Every structure is written in structure tokens, then in C-alpha cells.
Length: 275
Image 1: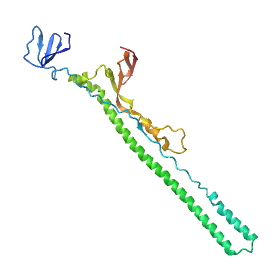
Image 2 (image 1 turned 180 degrees about the vertical axis):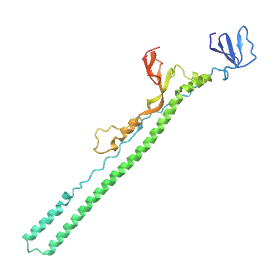
Image 3 (image 1 turned 135 degrees about the horizontal axis):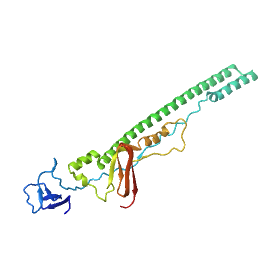
Image 4 (image 1 turned 30 degrees about the vertical axis):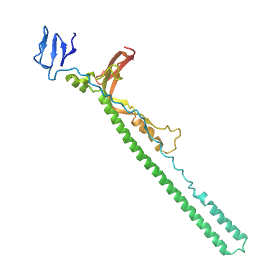
């Protein structure tokens, strides 16, 4: 038996260290082995326990952001071209009135009134088209901004959930110290078959999120259309998770070291390969 070996006899558990056997019960007789019966430090007897580990499965489904609706077509608001037919008809009536002087004045007056109504109708139509265009643009902007805000909340909730999963998977230094002090079963929750076996916690920082943001790259941008670039901006803004555990995998590392200029900055280099 070597130091720090665990053993069990019936319902009794213990471990061996420096020619002593540590038990959790008193009044236990041993032969030719010095016995230590007191409790260790301020914790209970460090019984070796390996519970079934509940692994957190991260959702890797991409978060899709739809493109904004097409920009409303800008109507032709040139008042000169719109009134050109009425102006031409008015000039034609004046010319015909001079050539055909026998024509009654009633017909000329009727023609002028008809052309006047056409001019008024054209002007009203121009202002209506302009008003409708502004309304369509405002509705498009308001609808898409509301959609983007909802997607941001969805992304933030997904990032918080992913951060909680990372914090449960990779313990902080303070948590590791507590686990060692209490001889927690979480010290033995990783097996060599696990993907995160021998992952070393380094601290907190930014890490790339698992759930990527899926959006369509714009091959052609409309001039002055700010909505078309919003999916790319949102994807860039929420690409990383801040305050997430930063770790390095030493499972397949043959050489590893750390160096830095001060206590707060260091880099980790490792050469991968089979152990």
C-alpha cells in the first residue's frame, strides 16, 4: 500500500498516509499500524466519492437574423414632366384658337378648365406619392428595428445560458480551493474519456460563442440604407462572450509553459502530441 491509497473494508472507508490509517470512526483496532482517529482539520473525513457526472450539453443551433425588407421604390416626383402633357394641351388650344377664329369661346373655356383639373390632379398625385413613400420607409425602419431588438434579447439570453454552462463546467480558482479544502467529489468528476479532461483554468476573458449568428452577406448595398448592415453589426457585437472561463487543454500536450511581463499578463504555449 502506498501513501494516499484509499481502501474500504465492509462499511468502513479509509486512506493510508505516512504509516497511518485515517478513518472516519473511532474505536477501530489495527495491528502493527499506527492509527489516527481525529478528524482532519476542520472538515469531515475525506471520503473518496465519485458520483455520476451530469454533463451540460451546449446548444449549437445557429441564431438566424433575417434581412430587412426591400427598400420601397422611390416614385418619380418631377413636377415638370408630370405637368408637361397639360401644358402642351394648353399651348395647342391657344394656337388653334388663333388659327380657327370661328371656334366658339365656350369650347376654349371648357378646354382650359379641363386642363386645369388635370394640372391640379397631377400635383395632388405627386404629393400623395411622396407622402406614401415616406410612410413606407418609416414603417420599414420601425418594423425592422423592433425585430432587431427582439433578436438582441434572444442572443443575450443565449449568451447568458452558455456562460452559466461554462462556469459550471470550469471552476474558478476560488471554487477549486474550496473543493480541495472540503475534499469535494467534484475533484474526481472528470475521466480520461471526457473531452475536458486535463483542461486547465487560466482566468476569465472573452471567448468565441458556440452559437454563431447566421445572416446573409450583402453582396450589394443600397446607398443610404443603414438597415442592410445591421445583421453584420449584431453578429460582430455578440460574437464573443465576456467574462467567460479561459482554459487551455493539456490532454494532448507534450510541452507547456507560461511567461509574461507582470502578474496579470501571461501567455501559454503548448506543443500538441500524444502523451
